[in-house]
Length: 87
Image (cartoon, rainbow, N blue to C red; front, side):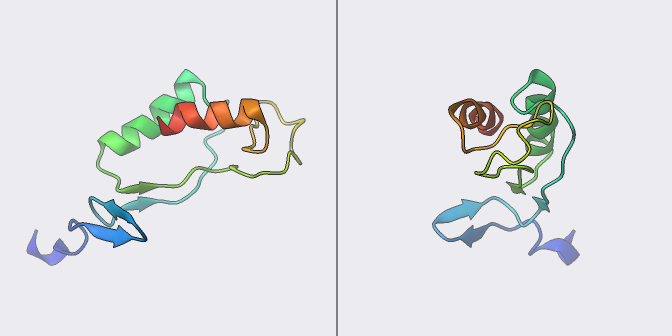
């Protein structure tokens, strides 16, 4: 495990300290944002030890408003859906 000392050590990014340097890039799992399935998907990664998780499709302009399950952070409903995942 000594070869991975930095990977598993904390790092400060701005004013946030991450518990390790493992990150999950933004992906689109194609679940309705904020649904039980969506929350469980990200929760499993957090419980697995990921230090930083990126959320896909967290845009402010509702350019894909006609896509089922798409939620932007530019609308009250979209903000609430993203909040459920983050919480």
